[in-house]
Amino acid sequence: MKRLLFLGNSHLVAVQAAWQAAQPKGYEAEFFGAPQRDWARMALLPGNLFGLTVDGATKRQREMTEKANGKPAVSLDHRDILVIVGSFPAADPLAILLADCDVTGLRETGAATLLSDTLFAKACQSLAEAQLPPSGWQNRDETVLMLPRPAPAETCLGSTFPGYRAWHRLAAAPGGVSAAFGRFDDRLKAVMAECNLVYIPQPARTRTAIGLTAGHLLAPGGGIKAGEDKKRGDHAHMNISYGAACIAELLTALQES
Image (cartoon, rainbow, N blue to C red; front, side, top):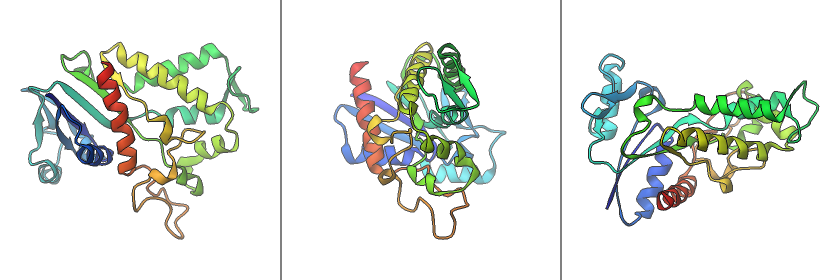
């Protein structure tokens, strides 16, 4: 029986629901999560614990974390596999780059900036290194799997919120975008593997041609509400079907490792 501990922010919800629905055999799983504002106050703690730091969290954050998990911190002892969910973006940084830059032989749309293949590779390397977790998660005895934050749902294309500008520009000129994301995922895998981390890309079947998450995978309540197309909206949180796709990829990665 392999002992898993899932750790994550609000994106953990879809993965947890899918795991509990599937009940994969041969694994014993525990989940420890918190909304992003609370997650940002969490860290590895003395005694091989992970949770809210003593000085960095408010009383309310402690109360909310204890209410959700039954405790403010969780022990990492006696775990075979640690799974970190949603703590880093693997889509938005590259989308911003591709929205303003072409890449020789890969994407040529007439953008003001043209990157050589070599320079694009270096940019992907830098972006990938920026997604690495703190050193305490690297080169551990346990297997550590990294699941990225999902790309925004394609419903964001109906929003005029400035934060989605890059995705609008990619939608207008989609050539080469999918291949570019594939190369970036390959670089993320390599960079994380150097630190003994297993990167699990967002499942390809959940993504559109420009790398957004398919709209039918958005969690209930998300999308654009009437008269609120100028607001950010929630195009970030996905449903149990998305979680199931991630679990399938996770189980495949575990079997391969």
